Image (tube, rainbow, N blue to C red):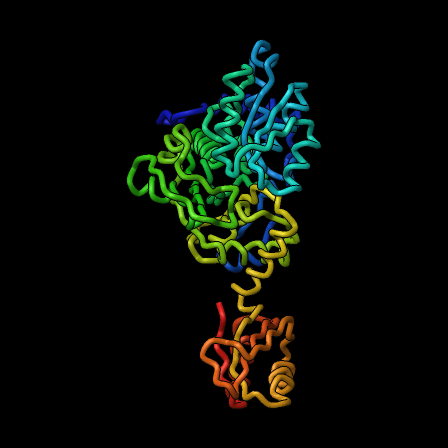
Length: 412
């Protein structure tokens, strides 16, 4: 038996949640990754929750919470606020249980997420221009109609549902030593970490849990250092699914006891991770779901035994995917952007293109202007975007240009 009492759900709560959640959630695949194993220096497995129903783990917590409502509560329906995964999870859970669901979403929500939520049968109300605006509207709706508000992470039943993912990990990789996953409000990591810790302590074994946040929105990283839930001011990040200002109250009580470390990754790191998952693992993963892989690729995870990385979601808008891939290519030095000044005479553009071609790089975009800042009357400026094979190849292209008398300057 465990020699300590954790806040939140007990192991029996997690086991009961697993029985309920199994009625709607898939047991998602666990895939080994040769590439990431080589990067880390230890075996790495990917828990593909991006292949879950609704495209993320969120359906687990939503279904568990809705399943334990009283008949009186169910008669009033449920309400939630979200810009994406939580909305879809609640909508599907409500449909499966025959409940009326109303979901408040911000006006600018991505169309695929809006349509998916409606397709699961929920009434969608567009309100405000942020998740916070939608959240206020949802709570007002709950107060006026009696609909039960379903929080995205800060509730014991939601945490218990998310923790069923941890029990699956132990089934699929019994010798796992480390689990790496994203942290937003904390529902996923609180559930998974608590569940696996309680199982392992009964077995007399330990386990290491590492949380990963976007650097632009990392309240847990600060809170863990200070020992108290602390708010931050989030700034924009591509990992909007985990962008929160403050940890959940119950979530932090659990996390501070069972999570060993919280690290942060930049948007460029995350973009590179998404590109790697596409190319190496053939997995489509949203930015919030890829931060664990980014932490491994940036060497922030120490190689201490078999490691499982949770790919928590795959709901990425195609337009966002296009931008993320471009950013990932640039961050990997496979998309080189530079400008170079040229004498304003015929043949200069052709000469630069010829040098790039001779270096086996591919020009994808060209801007030719006489109006750049600081240009002489007899000069023009050429701005090129080219595809390369990586950092060494990009450097070779730049060196060839310099050898031929040009002075290229990288553009970030």
